[in-house]
Each structure stands twice: as C-alpha cells, then as structure tokens.
Image (tube, rainbow, N blue to C red):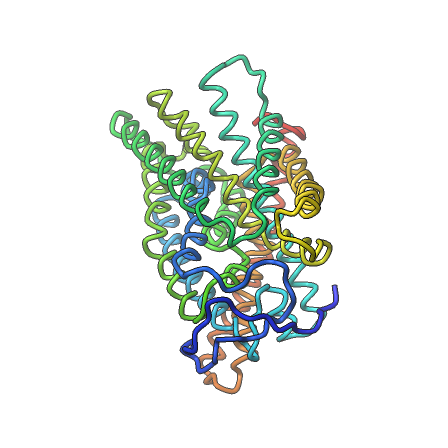
Length: 450
C-alpha cells in the first residue's frame, strides 16, 4: 500500500482563523486522496460520534469485565486513571492533525508522514486489527441483545446465539449499504443517543431496584493468585478500550476548521459529560450484583418484560449504528481504492459496489463473532494488540519526534516513560488475553451458545 502523492482538497466551510498553534487552517491539502467528505461537521457532531463510541452497548459489559476482576478500589481508580491518560493521549494526537501543513485524515497517513512508508503499512495493519476486533465485538453484543429479546418472548431455545449473531451481521450490512460515509450519519447519531440513554436508564433503574431488594453482595475478587494476575492485566486492557476509538484522525477528518481547537472541544465533551452514563451503569451494575455481574448486564436485571424488551432492542439498534462508525475507516479505504469516482454515493453502481464489498467485510466479521463469542476476551485482546500501541505508544512517540526541538529534557523523559510503560503493558496484556481466549475455547466449542 504505497502512499500516493498529496492531493489538493478544499476544506468545506473553512474560515481564515488559526488552530491555536500558528497554522493556517483554510484551504489546506489533504495528505491522501479520499472519496469521502472532509471538514464538514461541527464540533458537537464529532463529540456525539465520540460519545456514541464510549456509550455504545459495550457499556453493558463493563461492570462484569472491569469491576468484577478489579474490585471497587482497583476498578474505580483504574477508570479515572484510564480516562485521564486517554484524554491526554488523544489530545496529543489531535494536535498533530495539521503537521507539515497538511490534513492527515487517517492514522496511517500521519504515521507515514513522520516515519515513512514502512510505518504507514504497519500502522494500517494495527488499525485494521483494532477495528476488525471492535466490529466483531459489536456483532457479538448485537447477537446477545437479540437472543435476550427472543428469550423474553419465547423460551423454546430455538434461537441460539450463533443464529442471532448471523441476523445481527445481516442488519449491520443493510445499514452499511445505505450510509455512504461517516458524515452521513447525522440524524442517526441522534437516534443512537436516544437508544443509548434507553438501555442505560433501564439497566440502571432495574439494577438499583434489584440491589435495594437483595441481601449483601460479595465483592471479593475470585480465582487463585495466578489467574487473578492474568484477569487483572486483561481488565487493564479493557479499561483503555472503553475510552478510545483507535481512529481519532479519521474522526477529526470530518470536523470543520479550526480542526485542532474543535477536536479538543469534542474530546472535552467526551471525557466529561459524555462519560457520565458510562460511570453510572458501571458502578450501579457492580453495586447491585457484585462478583456475580455478567458481561451483559441486561441478563442480570429483573423487572417488567416490556422494559427489558425495549432495553435489549435499543442495545441492538445502537450497536448497528456504532459499528458503522468503527467500520468507516475500512469502508473509506475500500471506496477510495476500488470504488467508482463517477456519480453520487447513491448511483446504482456505487450502491452495488457497497453491497458487495461491505457485505463481504461484515460477513467475515460475523463469522468470527459466531465462532468465538467471548466478548470480554475480545475487549482485552483489542486493547492489548492495538489500543495500547495506537493510542498511547504511537501518540507519545509521534508527538516526541515531531516536537523534539521544542521539548525540554523533562518533557522528553515524560514521553519516553509513557512509551516504555505502555509497550510493556501492551505485551503483558496480549499474553493475558490470549490465555483467556485459550481457556474459554477449551471450555466452549466453536459456535457456542453462551
């Protein structure tokens, strides 16, 4: 995948202001050509994209996958620390968007500009793994929501989890066919917010009700010392997974000028107001069920069938929208590299292209999800293999390399400390996650109905 020469692209709705770092931000070239829209979204739409990712249906699993292995102290401190370091790393990355007087609209473009073609390809491979694993997890969640919804209606056991995952993948594909690029989500982000609030409020309300009626819960961390070490490391990977997308440059590409200032506004919204629902459901869910909390909280709650049905349906629908966000870098690559440059996005030949290419990509995602439906393990492995390297290791090193002349010795030491620490944590977390997947693969057969 060689990097093509920069192509001049006018940034839509740009103005003659500056980005706060002295760079003119109107009429800047884009580092690589694209067939998707660039620079058209206000900062608050980008903030809702980020918040949609943070409060996706993954939040229904964090009480079980984060708090159960870490406990009250470790889980609470870990959530706050992960939020702080994630905000810092994403802000560093956002400030590099206009490096060299070009808009770097993809993570790999930025890495290629700083390091060269080899790192361009390696970054693309890591990001592909990251987004593929995230999308696989989304399809697992959608399948769990669909199965839970079915069990509320019928208990005959006919709809196994693999069948529900297959239906979920098909619905995600239908949505992908009709939404050509990330900026086109627009009103769907509003629907996503409504869906998120629906299942979060329902889960919190029913969990509170259960917690007040239940006897004292057990919050102790289960397992022997060796297994607890691995589960703790895996949970640490899931902590950073909760806050980070692994595709910040691609999201920043859609924001209007001034792109750095507007991106920082969106990030502040994500890590303040945007995280409140996340914290609420994690804390309340763990408080209500202790170490018996599952990795899909709606399986724990008790209450009126209609409330649980609406919550599960909302989780399913929100997952369809959220998956599209995390699949958009792959869609953009496929559309730009292989798609037609003739006609609009809804021209018949372009729609047929999306059906074939995006349908094939999601078919592979769906097959993987059905074969290995271990959601917590996927979250840990994704955090280890790609979230740590992309968000923390690369962000700090790219900022260090790009600003080496302006940083003091103390600042350089700080960035190197981050690089070394997160590299070690990434390696240990990957080992822990693979161990968990191997353990669960022995306990369950492929296409398991878990």
